[in-house]
Image 1 (cartoon, rainbow, N blue to C red):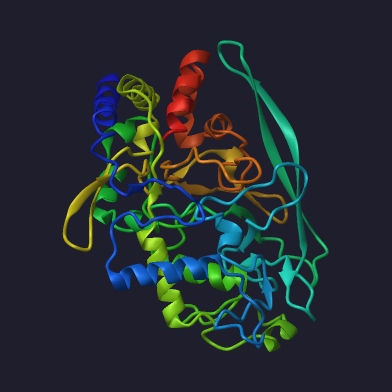
Image 2 (image 1 turned 60 degrees about the horizontal axis):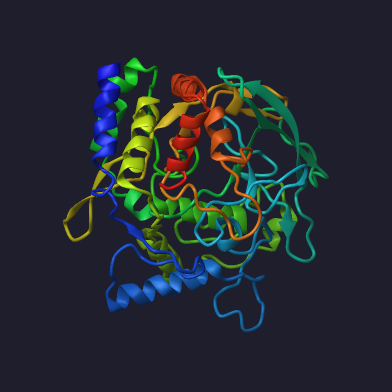
Length: 422
């Protein structure tokens, strides 16, 4: 194992300068740049996609809506930016109480969505209709101690669904709280080959460390979407109530008669606007993050690899661009699913734990903080720091977490500071 980790450490340390493709300075988060120069038509489509991304959609039939209508009848937020915070990850709850709009409660059963409430619990509605429910969270503290005696505290969330408009959720419906993941570099993630993911899944070093990566889709916290187009259409449909040609139904169920009667036309997001939003995401750059000295970079990368983090958060990936060029990116992900232990599992309405596997979250730009509020991490924003996010890792990541815990205070801080500059 020592030999395998030494090899990975050398790979990480030698890759920083060579794997910065896709990064651009982010002078203004409201004007995120593309990762490469765009032609006239490409630039116009990118700019249109950015405007649509930031636009508040309105109810169908609103005068002078300029094609940006059809919101609802049930929804969570009225714009893409309302969840994705200028392309960054959504913000989780800062404390007890109602959850912010960038956290949605997905509903899933073995047989499909909840029979009454559909795929997503919608907490807002157009005039004349009531929201499906209200969602709040309460945290209890879980405390522990590092081997060197330092104390740590984690937040353990408990979600409460109240004021259900159409009766109870099905007892076997799984409650899946999810904040919006960051969109930086997603077009490059889409270009990571299946062959490369197969090699990562079969890596003997990872297997020896108890890691069993599974291939699924590339997008969503659990790899539910195989393409960026599918992920985008699902978000429009289930979180904004907007139909597209790819997904020509919103999240109104047969049991919700009034909702179905209030639907707008199909598609509500016309093909040109959908294509523009997709083009914006596919070309969106990863914000360049200031780095420290080469020595500090090498030392942090070596700690990251020695802990075993790089066996899932792969430091380098080769992608082929549309013009045929091959480039190397540093997304720090294998885009595989992993069991991260019982602490991060979802539960169904009856309180039963459901085995959950998580797509390795890309770490590039993970240290960027939102313009407002506090930074939150993991699928539901329960972690208020990168340190807390690491401490939640268990299951296949238990050995890596244990190595992190054993580093000692100074080296833990050194690793976390390096991680914040990815």
